[in-house]
Length: 285
Image 1 (cartoon, rainbow, N blue to C red):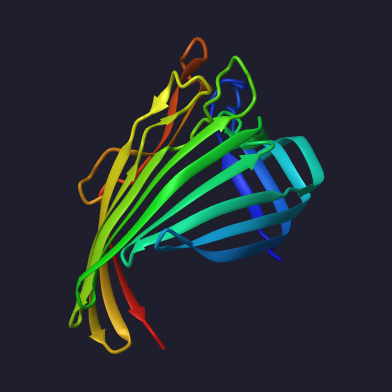
Image 2 (image 1 turned 180 degrees about the horizontal axis):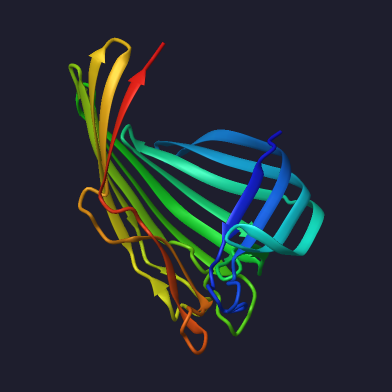
């Protein structure tokens, strides 16, 4: 059982709906989460290669008491849009097959059918139940150790996500990424340790007909550590080492800034962090 709470203030459309007070709103909820995850696996051979089939079911249940949406200005509540108590249940059945081709290469194929795809609505800052969908893909996991205490790893994934019904709006699922990659090297040498990792997110559709797309992004992070004592370690991290201008997430919807005569439909971006230096001191006891 998990009991999270939420207090979130947002303004995605600026002054589109209320030029006097602005469009800020407050989301608040108290949630109780229960769930069941069950999985059955079978070992088998794909030719001469070791493989594993997995079939599983997920049964989550949420109770929200209350969940509220309020209009606000400078984090001061102005009025209540609605306040409810909600019970929601869902179920999912999944199937996957993974094959170990060599000690350092492993693949997995999967498929997921949903009766209702959960879609994030950028201008409202919330999610809503959408159309039925099907997702399937292939994942490759590679590990290689060139020397003692050193590892090179590469994780590559491709997926295909589409709505399953017929709709003139299109069958692309907004925000669904088809290609991702993570490649890194890490190791230790005496008191020193370190690593570097590259993360790639491919381009993705932002609307159902794929007429507006988000660009791809590539980030490189680096970490260096030095053991000062048996239980004391100093670490230094550089995030976005190449100082790339990328977005963490993009949405396409209408908004209106102060001074604009009419709403404008455009891409709204949450920018990624610029080059950032972090230092830490860890003491284990």
